[in-house]
Amino acid sequence: MDEISNGVTASALSGARWRKSAYSNPSGNCVELAELPDGGVAVRNSRHPSGPALIYSRGEIAAFIQGAKNGDFDDLAL
Image (tube, rainbow, N blue to C red; front, top):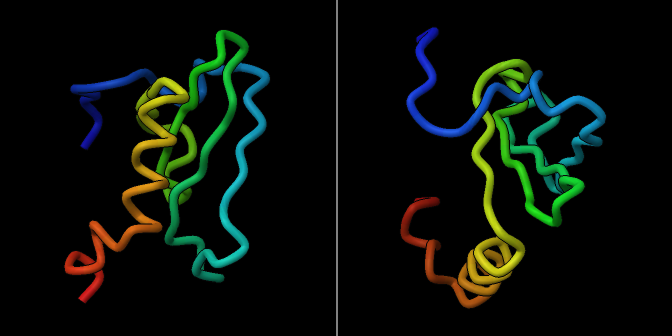
């Protein structure tokens, strides 16, 4: 899949310091996040570090994290 249909290429986000959760899969199958200079947050697939990155506002990331804490997505992990 070479076409990017949403977001930007992660490699275009020069200077981004990507990080992942300490709970991430050791084989590298996880998501990584990076804080952007404008306050946004970029999200990418760690298996494709130069692939697409989706950009979210801090509010969107906060809502997602709170939803995860509340168990809103637990059914997707089964």
